[in-house]
Image (cartoon, rainbow, N blue to C red; front, side):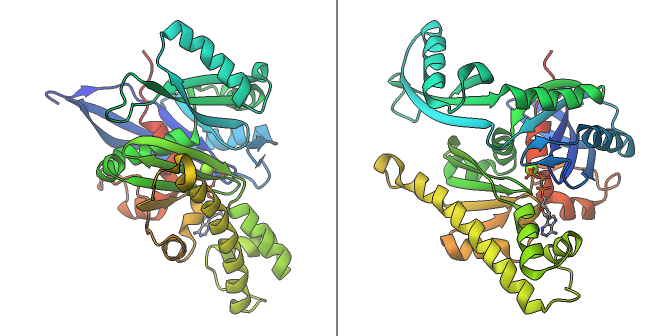
Length: 359
Ligand SMILES: Nc1ncnc2c1ncn2[C@@H]1O[C@H](COP(=O)(O)OP(=O)(O)OP(=O)(O)O)[C@@H](O)[C@H]1O
Ligand SMILES: [Mg+2]
């Protein structure tokens, strides 16, 4: 179309421990704005135990699942961007005096060696300079330092290699969520202090942004698998029964009140973990800081009334994150009901799919 420049798309691939999600977006540039349209989308559950706590245990199962995901959804683009999360990803915000780029590169290495709890040689380190807050330009550099364990990068790269796709980039879940938030809720993202919480199976990622600048990223070892595991043990049921209870199916051999009580305990545990992160953020720098809006995504965000529980606990407006709020999909080609039902699963993958192929 006139005035619209088309960018070469990648396929975002979110390799979660419960399910793998794929999304391809057509990105059109118009002036400074990007417009996004879904061209391909897919979701494929993984066998239980194929990935445990972010570690690939059964790589053949992961490879087969990715292949099936591409075939079933007729995805022919081979250029993929994936992300990783969990305790082999370390993200730190550091402040350094303004300096020349060569000097900065050396300082980053020094900071990485002192800030990261793994030997420097075992990690890949990257950094981004954050936008300075108004009025402080030129004084300090706010830097986001990212370190990822090399063995983790190798394991994920290897899986992609076996699927015969081209690995364009490896992101971290937190940054992908940050992108998805920025494109879908630009007003709140620019004007407010907001938190987006992605509650998955093994990992819950929290990001907090203040007026468009990332303030805190955190991966907690908590999620739906812990819920199912607790239900299984506490109510003496099978993994499958626990899983269907989590999804709201009426229990067979257990009283509904017991299920409700067990679920309530698990949600309480999750909310308390999130509270620690919020308290840490609000107490940092001794500034008055308050989260004004909470968004929830990830599979567990589908849990009945979880947004209401967060809203009551934190006295902060909480809504389910819609990763397609500003992403167009053609309702004649793709079923809108699918998007409504699947929206919460697609937070990370939407952020990944907004990347363009490097020329
Ligand atoms: N309708 C539902 N209600 C409640 N929980 C659900 C529902 N659907 C899925 N879940 C739970 O959500 C979790 C999966 O979420 P998600 O797909 O975001 O995880 P993942 O990205 O694969 O995992 P991770 O990123 O933690 O490795 C599972 O624990 C599953 O039991
Ligand atoms: Mg996930």
